[in-house]
Length: 455
Image (cartoon, rainbow, N blue to C red; front, side):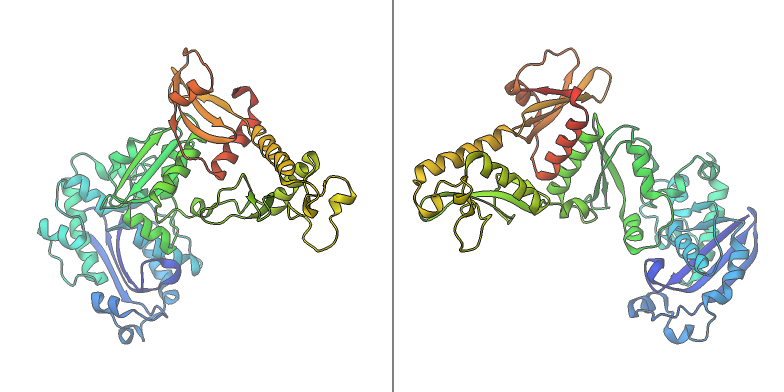
């Protein structure tokens, strides 16, 4: 038995909007056996543009039943049926959300007449309900009202049943099929071509604009996870409607997928990526020369255009490193901004300061030690190649780090003789380095030291 459903709502996502009208047509696979239709008071204002589209006004629903008053009847009609709608995940997410709020947990198999129509009637100009009905000569009356659209969807489903010579309905209902999880405008073939390997995937809208970039240890499994469940929030509902295409790049390892993802998000700036857009380490170690010619080290917040010698998540990490450099190279606490008051320099008393703050040590001698400290810092930033799994059995992946920063990554055949840093730099594709990527690679390298080739 099938329950063919259409709803009208106050907005595009269930968590912040109500249902204004619902129509349910019960179909036994041969004929219609029952119809149900009612207006519903959403207890929310119906926006003017929605009233203009549907013809449903606040006055019309003022005396209609609340959803809670009809929830039991609606649940009784649909809970043990196959749930059908045009763009099924929209209608299903609304009903699941609002039924759950009334104490009813909806768990139905689903069929989407958009996706089924694409398979049974391929090559049509559009699969929106209005245009699809016009192309298939389905009588659509009272469009954008629940009753009219449910009746048209019922006629459309009857045509699909009659013309489904290849068994697309049964394939969609198969427990292992992900057909009804996919966005309505995404071709199944694009999902099927995803491999079970690490990589980066891209979601595109109808105009070919990148909506989202993600990384995966298993591309097919990760992409599938985007489409499971019936999250009712606006972001997900809009996201699902917009996805029209998928592309991907395979990577040898999940770490390489992390790096590629971070690079692509910075390059493409997709509207649905948020976390990596915001990531920037907040503090840095800087050097500048004051009016007297003394070179001064300090820890400060990173600002646009500033290039630190080193970066830190927390300010105390920077001060800890700076104090180590001060002690080893006898740098002045005042010139390093560790001591900011007007008192005598604590470094003079404790011997690490040789009097640069008072001008008793020449700037030339002091600056030599500052440059030595910077050289030590840079020398502690390692250069190495990280060797790991490739995209197939014949190759291995290579990530090249130079003085603590990412130079690039790529692949070499396993039997290739490995040489020096200059050779590695020539065989990999350069990638931009940033604090996020640097920390990822160093953390991974410290966890798997056996995969490091140092220079």
